[in-house]
Length: 272
Length: 266
Image (tube, rainbow over all chains, first blue to last red; front, side, top):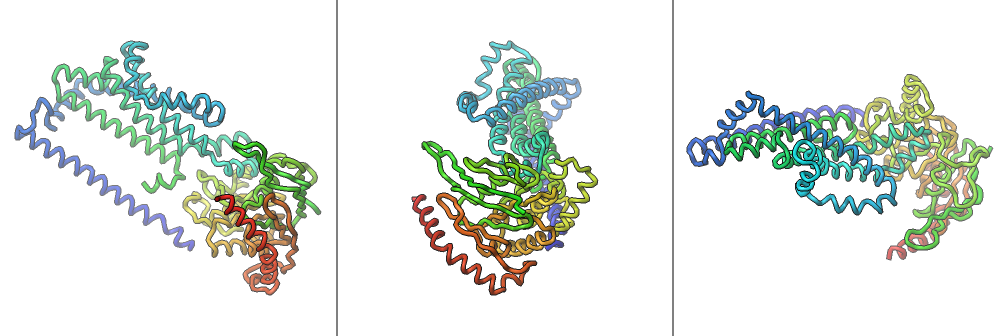
């Protein structure tokens, strides 16, 4: 039994990593085929180049936008806004989540308010954001905050609510000091629930920043898309959209890697 | 020498949405001598785990008192470590770090902790699994790790709350034998909670039978089987007769308890 246990994981791991390689290859193949078809349809003039530019045209547009620094500048502006907004949301969401998770009474008072605000889409806050903050960075920070704060709150709240009583008891009967209880039991116990909340918050925040920039900013990817539409530079609109998609994908990937590093004891994080 | 004493303990829990309270334990008197293995035996819902939680210091009695070496038990303490039914290993720590936890709380140096943890992991036959996380090992191995973790800080008394209840029958028998060996080697004092008569007879120096509604002590039985207890013990005629006798005396009340439980569900 011991041998089976010790020799078990390695073949499993190689099997899953070889499957991952082929999964990536398949994904790239899928993208390649779609791009090829798209390009063929565009070259055959079946697709109107003004309504939807061909992949090659997009590539040239991207090279131009990268070359003169426009794209990098807008990406930088958007990322900065997301980070500020999500950071504030994380702080507020964590604090409120811990407080309401901890105190039943406080939760009775405040949970209905939070639950009533939660279904309002962040975009619906845009008019107020502009009224309150004008045009610029502030309304974007605010809208990202609104979008990101609820996922963090919900995750933290349920993490605190679902702390395992027996694990706290186990730590206490082993003589854990209050510092050990927080550092070695409560924080690592809550992390697997809170971290996915942060990852979702970043994703939602990224969507919100683009929405905010469409209306209430003068830089950023959303603004770039909006300006390009006005100038009928459809290739720049689509390039901006692709940049949004790629960066969102990368952000999620980075968060997943951090999650695996930070929470190596989770079965699911290894099986994925 | 009496190490742990429970005197006239009552425990009531307030009822939710209803006035009044539910009496779970009624006038419990119990003493555990140093080096003794006492088993609390009773049907589900008789309050045996509540009693163990009181002894551990996780909860306080409504009336009466629990003392450990003459001092009142008011909070959990590393002199009384607990092995739980669901293991309660810390999933973010390797097996080794789990076992070291109680030592770390005492401020034992990292090097010394490692040495002691290895010793206890060898005792429960988990050498080679130090760096595994709990999710990577089987239920039986988790409970071995939990036993090592509870023993490492050298408690005065080991409290075990249906520790083998979640294991399959074969693993359960193996771990009972392991526990008998460890207890014999280390001369531990143990309070062990179970609803298995065989388990109780196999392990105990003394079986304390609890009745339900409210939980109270029905009877006590000294088990005079020879030590060390091992696989052969189960084949002894004394083991068989004792198990049979306990079952015969308990059957009517347990049946009653079951029917009440069913009636309560309806």
